[in-house]
Image (cartoon, rainbow, N blue to C red; front, side, top):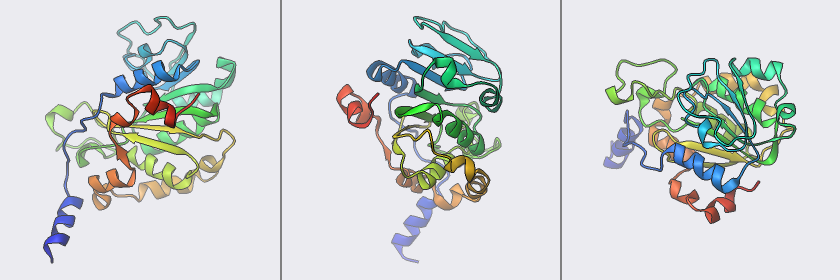
Length: 254
């Protein structure tokens, strides 16, 4: 085995890489709200309300168990809370009717399992316009141990409460099956953000092929892909590529 092939093999099987050093994801979300000025905001996975509190526009939040510990209303003209799983929300309610219009900005941070995020994206996209922005959280793991569907005893102590799960699979599936979408994947601390636009509310690809796509996602192995291989595949960029209004306007428009 040559030195080059040995190095490549070692890189592929590394169980972790250095922590992402990009701007924290709350700050990036604040950039989006301030600089894109959405009229409507939707999020799945509100928990304590830290992300919801950033929004000042009409908002809808979905979480099976809210644990709010701060002012999440702020200057919002409207804010609705649905304490149910996201699947139940989309079955029972029409998000476009709630807002009386499409969603401008969405943040999906629900259950950290690939098939759930795939459904959340597909269901949310139906209520957007082409130039809306959907943000996915936790798709850029820096350790093998935190990128699985179940907790691992090998997770480092400082990450025991931060397990992104296997939603990295969802990002790979979206890139493959929806090449029409425009992706910006940034290294926001701690586990990245995926910003998606050029949406197609009429698309039925994800719902029509859902079972096959899930089966395909479950066949993916991060051990085979490698963490750095994943970073290369998803074109991970520094948050500096969107840290000014001018840079944001080159990629997103509302």
